[in-house]
Image 1 (cartoon, rainbow, N blue to C red):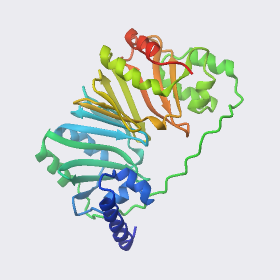
Image 2: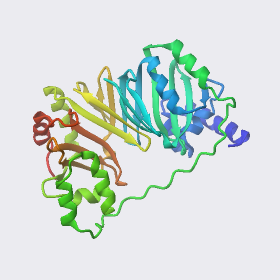
Image 3: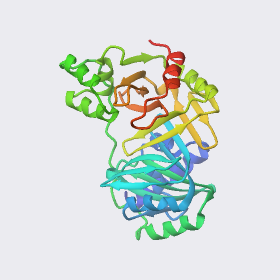
Length: 345
């Protein structure tokens, strides 16, 4: 973007904030017809610092910051988890963070922009993809190591403080048609029933050229069924009351963030269903749920039961499971919770 273009966008953004003081930058970017990264970049030199270098190296150093808050979101749900980045590893551009609290799968192939941001007393590291969409954010807490944060920024500050790479225009999203493809349904169902690892489900879909929605409609009898999305609130409340530990997956194309453990405080505010616990917050936009499914997949440790939320475009954007580890059967309390809390459509 030219200097004149940056100046014009900065003026629009400043005026927009005056008129909409509580607006979030992601929503403002959509309303202004730009990207979040471009809006953020209008603050370069004024609390925003462009970072350079290999983002894998930056992530490897995040553990030195101590206690932080990890944030991953998509269009419909925000996942915030406090803790320490531990057991960080990379294989190519795929990374793992496997700490007690912070649990991430990172796909850095399209991480294009990194910023250090100081705004309203909050400090953070923020990463964006080539479309200027937020991939992952890391916020300091009162317990974070501020000295290490400043040292990290100094090491990775870009020599030129402007966006030199053009931000791509996001492709238009289309509503998925309801037409089912003609496949060998018997063979597909047989392979579903023969799964040994739930991670192989994605490979199965690719083999038969199926979207998520199509696969669920063609599932073996009893292995996928739709439920009433409004029952998710009941599921949360029952999980809280009975202290059934759950796993909450929120993903975008660049990151998957996972919470494992019990949940406590649940409440609704407008269209948002919220979990507001000391170390874990979730904000789920209920009106974005076009379909909600209970899905059962075989594994070597037995059936794994998940709740999957899909939007009108056919995108899987949120998943829930009972707490489990690979090779260990899922909690019977979880399957009982599913059966008791969710009504079939």
